[in-house]
Every structure is written in C-alpha cells, then in structure tokens.
Image (cartoon, rainbow, N blue to C red; front, side):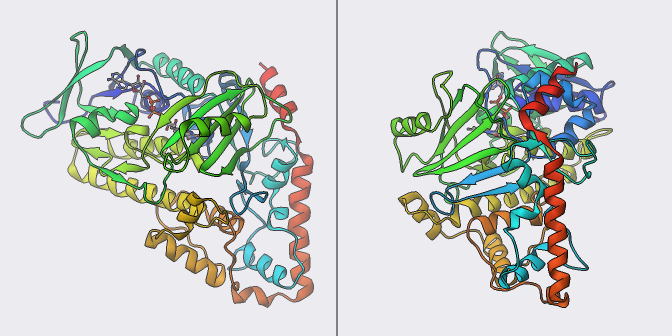
Length: 497
Ligand code: FAD
C-alpha cells in the first residue's frame, strides 16, 4: 500500500459474516482487489443464526442469487414475521408481522384511525388489517406479484446457517476470492500508526493485507484482542447471557414465521426449516441453571431432538468502534445482540454496505472510520432499544421479568414509549432499522396502550371511518386468502429446478 490505496483485503473468519463479506466484495469489488479469507476448520463457526428480516433479500438480490436456488441450497423457508408468545403474560400472543398494516390517509398513519375506531368499539384487532399476520397465522405464503398479489408484502427467510455460508463460499470462490485454511496465532501491527500489518498462522505462514475485516466471531481477534477496542456492555438492559441450541425433527404445518416464546428465565426460539426445526433457549444464568434451562428447552420441542444441545455464552453489547485503523469488524466480532428480532445477519449486511460506500478506490481517511462508527453506533443502539422494549414492557411475574420491568431503560427508549403512550406517535429517525409499524406492533403487543390518537383522525365522519377500516381488513383478508399452504409452496419452488 505504498500510495495508501487499499488493494488487498484479508477477511479473518469464515462464518456467516466472513462469507457474506467475501461474496459481496467479490461481486462488487472484484479485480483489481485481492480478496482472501482465512478460516480454521479446527475452530469452526458458531453455527446458529437462521432467522432473518426482509432486508436479506436486498443482499441476495445484489449478489444476483436466484431465490429458488438459494432455498434449495439452504433448506430455506419463508418468513412473514415473528410470533411472540407469553411476553405480555403467559398464554397471550402477538405477532410482529413484516410489511404494512392498513394504509395512511392524508397526513397520518393508519393506526391513528384504528385507535379511534377501537375507542368507539368499531374496530377489529390491529392484526386483522395485516396481510402478513393473517397469512402467517394460517400458515400460508406466496411471493408478491404472484397470483395477482400486490407488491407491498415483505418477507424474509429461515435457512440453515452452515449451508448459507457454504453457498456463499462457492459464490465468492467462483468470483476470485481465495480461502486460506489455518489457525491465526499472531497479529502484527505497524509501528507508525498501529494499523494491522499481517496475521500469522500457526504453521508460520504470514498473510499481509492493506485492509482487514475481522469476522472471527465472539473472540474478536483483531478489533477486540489486537487493537484492544473496548466493549460497551449492555447486559444491564439485556440480561440474558447464555443460549442452548438444538435441532429437532420438522413437524407440520410449516409455519411461515419465527416463534419466540417467553419462559421463566428467558425465551425460546423456534425456526422451521425444510429438513429440521431450529430451537434454542436464550436465558439469564443468574435466574436459571444450565441443566434446568436444558430441561425447559427439551420439554418445549415439538419434534424429536436430533442432537445434543449446544451451549453458547455471550454478553450483550458492542465494540466501541467497529472500524479502527485499517480494520473493520463484522458479525459477532463487532458485538452481540440477542436474536429476538433476528437482526445479527442484517447488521453484517449493513456493515458490508457501509464499508462498500466508504472503502473502495483510494486511501483510508480517518473520516471514513468516524462516519462508519457513527452510523454503526446509531443503528446498534436503535436495535438495542427495540429489544429492551420486549423485556421491559412485559406482564410476567418471574424474578427476571419483574427486574426487567423495574429497570431503568435508556432515555431514547423512555422518550419513544412516552410519545406513543401520550398520543400514538412513532417516529423513525436516522439509521433506525425498524419501521413505525414494527414499533407499533411490539408496543401494543407488549401492552403499551396510547391514551389518545392523532386528532386529525377525527376528521373522518363515522361512516367514512367504518368504510376505510372495512376496506383495509377486506384487502388484508383477500391478500392472505390468495396465498397457498406454505409447505406446498416451498416444495413447489424447490422442485422446480
Ligand atoms: P462465527 O460463525 O463464530 O465465525 C467465526 C469464524 O472465525 C470461523 O470461521 C472461525 O473458524 C474463524 N476464526 C476464529 N478464530 C480464528 C483463528 N484464530 N484463526 C482462524 N480463524 C478463526 N443472527 C440472525 O441474524 N438470526 C438469528 O436467528 C440468530 N440467532 C442466533 C442465536 C444465537 C444463540 C447466537 C449466539 C447468535 C445468533 N445469531 C443470529 C447471530 C449469528 O449467528 C451471527 O451473527 C452469524 O452467524 C455470524 O457469525 P460470525 O460469522 O460473526 O462468527
């Protein structure tokens, strides 16, 4: 890098994050960039991370991946949202469905009209106006623009994380990225500026690069260990620090949604794939022993367990800087937010997109790192607040949940809740991932009820309001009704090779 221009990129780690980065760099940078990825079979990958949000489609589309081929390669299924069971109180459920609910009228959002109608006793449940929620509850799916469906339906995937990484590996290697097998034993830094100069494998091979992407997982080999970037610990708000993951035999119906069931000391996920169902219990080790957690997880499976449960430990939070010097961290090396809203793979994708906006073409300017870090911090903090909302606004009675209800929450979240409670107002600000309708569903679903709504909703005459809502619910019902059984749809798409 005599002229300071970045030409060779070394990716450290070949989990989902590493191979997503390699695939994107190979696709969008290609030659003259030299892209190498170092990974160690001996160490392996975390192997979980199977539920996504709709933005994953932008990533796959950007790579030019055929969606049916991707489904076949990864044993994938479709996802229309996340069903939350038992969070407000045991036995109560709601769904965070993707896509819109109703449509805005004039200046204001649909939910203000719905709140007014509800106050007047003239509304159905909020989710009766959501095509995705109706379809998810009926186990139906079809892609937008098929069967005459409108294009506004948002969907994501469940997939086998190891198969996805393998798929992206062949994609990246076919486009010139090179894989180097070996365990990194040492990281060398340059004297003058502290930039990473090279990584050395246990066998002695030295791999130099202009820019390094740390995808080494929880260990954060470059950013955390070598560059000593501190960690911002968020466990005071997100107290779960362990997870157990176990696959079980698939059962029917094939649900087009992830399920997150609140338990006494955490919550259990259920992710339906074609060949198996992924399950896991995310829990607070201060509130339950590992053995009790395992018993809870196994008792909550709906198919025969296919392996021994795998144990994982983590601390919620993020590296204070995601970019330092000539190194950016992606994936678990950058931090950990529990998979309650399936956001980690998205954060990898967002980091790659941000990097591609800043990196190519020339030398590294300190302003690039500053902007990358500013955007990353905002994005992570807004997701953090969204996750804390699920914990804080609960109606359960166990010690973990009582403590979460009573804990002091970030001011940014307090303000968001206050705005909603006062008059149903929700604002999406810069770099915020979740939409107004996402916040709406979780706030209402967790039992936060606004005391009023936007006064402009009163401008509609009662019969106009009834007609507006009735059109919205029949539209949602019509869209969901045009969809087909999810399992049949997946089988059909996967058979069409
Ligand atoms: P890893 O998969 O751990 O990969 C690390 C790589 O670094 C490996 O290839 C390893 O060999 C390599 N490596 C490490 N040290 C060295 C070394 N010294 N030398 C050479 N190579 C090395 N995300 C979602 O979006 N949705 C979910 O549903 C979801 N569920 C999750 C559930 C749990 C319990 C956890 C813990 C995470 C979940 N995630 C989820 C997050 C998701 O799993 C990760 O974001 C994703 O898998 C990326 O992991 P990674 O590639 O950063 O790390």
